[in-house]
Image 1 (cartoon, chains in turn yellow, brown):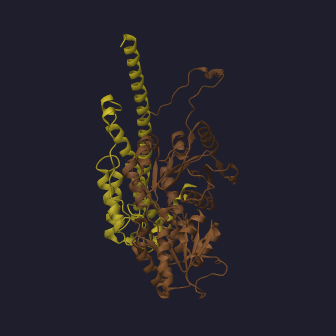
Image 2: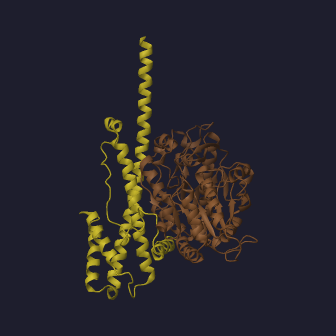
Image 3: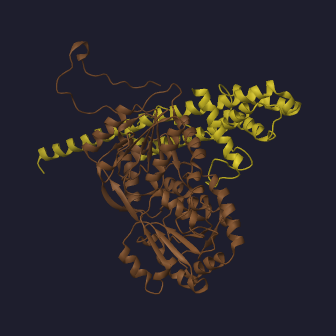
Length: 201
Length: 404
């Protein structure tokens, strides 16, 4: 081949590389924004859950009993503290466990608070799934050989999965199973959506 | 909330996804939300409602045993862009975005919170295997993924590499539960027993040949039995399949309206779904259960789930006319069992009411909304205006990049 042909070929390859890099950077930027958005949503729901647990422990000690009340309060405080330092997954798991262990009918607790709590728990599960989904997509693209060799977004930390046990009861109400169980289960979710709608408006 | 729904299939052709979008839109509107739908159609004239926007015509391609709508091109893209700009939606909800359709186009063009629902449950789709990875860069923009069933979610996980929340298809339960029966028919009138079948009867995967074969044994035990068939398809072909001896027992209603379908389901003594493969969900079973019809269905995974592992209906081996005929005959002979199944079916169907499911979908929308709010827009168009902008802003456009 003549030198011109070589030059042309090299230019073509270079152009392809530039286009690919630009496109991959666009994807990575979009994914980073999506991870941030998903994290903000998850963080908001987790904080809301801790806040509701605190409210429950503070204002309705009679419904819970001393033992449960103090454990719930410390769980909520732990979750709040772990937001800045410490193992957040562990703290949120502890709080989630306390909330799951609550008796199903809390006497004297206003229905609004109960449905709000149930709705928030549902949303924690949703937000966590969407966050992990975003993390998975990002890690997949970042982990490709070409992306690694090109060093795209090398200096950014790889986003971490957030794994907590966010089941809503004895079984997974929201998750891997599309069979819907007894009616009040769905009632929780629906009522929660109502409350959140009211709060949002 | 301002919600934009995108239906990838032709609006004026009946189909599960279209009904899903229509019912979801109606339910959300009933809850006081602003909902608009972007959809292709066979004829532009059939897109009449003010909340519908015509996205163009489509090229049908075979997909998962049915026809999918292929749609691309600058005209469609311009329509999508205009719809997104005019709609100023808080969230855009696309359906089945893995097919090269208007849904994927919306994923490409929109910026902002996108929710997607995946319907297909096939695991052997060459289309998906080929197109899935190519669509990936745009599917990455979806913030919240919903699958209508476990199987749809599995497709999502295996072919498209993502997780999804499972929210099943919905049914307007009251629409099917309350209303008149078909004229001259009706459960408990003491007339000849009736069996119902609804679906595109010339599609082999719907399994009508199996049911017809089973009918031969059913009419031996219950001579007056009538099979009512509603749905689209080639009538000539059907009658040749039915044959002379079975012909008096079969009534073809053809394509019926939704109201007539509900009336049919309220009329029949047994509803039969002999499908062979490819059903992602089985909305028709829920509709039948909501209408109080005892259900006999083949053992597709999706059907078994909808029927509460066989507690709310009779499940028979697929593609087994003898077993199906036996199950139908037994059920027709036992009114007590029919009543029991109908009661269980009604309870099972109540969980799939749109009122319940729309709230759950709203929870998904709320989760993907950015805390400060914001609207979905079309990404900037990559062409230059004919005239250079005047005034102070004549410099090159600055690209805003969020700093983190």
